[in-house]
Length: 214
Image 1 (cartoon, rainbow, N blue to C red):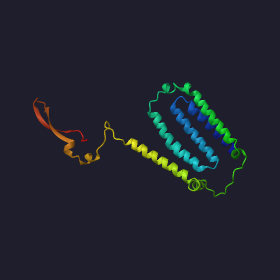
Image 2 (image 1 turned 90 degrees about the vertical axis):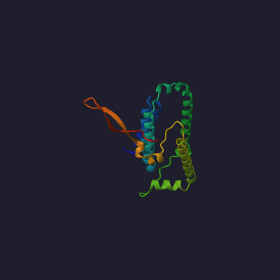
Image 3 (image 1 turned 90 degrees about the horizontal axis):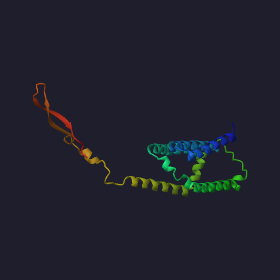
């Protein structure tokens, strides 16, 4: 099987999986088809000698992001019927956006840079795609790279700040009080009456565990 056959095979799988993502009635199935689309896209990148991007796509998106999406979809109680109520109302807008994306793709594929029939560059045996990508990122594209890093950092800090908001109705642990607690605060000995076989009542001492200090 040559490279061209593999390319068309991965392309067909990617298009089929992408269509099933937006047409699958079950959100769980949509997430699984999106994973299939990512894996087939990684195969195409391998054919284009972009090994680093292919591995990054599988490890980051399939191995981390999509697993998170999968758990979120499984944990949420999604009302599918209610979610699809406005499908036909927003269908014209979706068709217009799909048409614009199709026009852009045709315009890009018809550009001189992509349609001039340029032959791929033959690299040496010791050529490293990862090394070349790192050189371009930290030289020609260092400012966009740093800007993207700052934006991601701001997003992380904002997410942590929103999560750590103090709410009056939320119960929190006080570590200092838990460390200072004594056994007298956790264990209380009370006298519990019990009846013997002869019917007499005697006082026995039994340990009763009390509540933990907040």
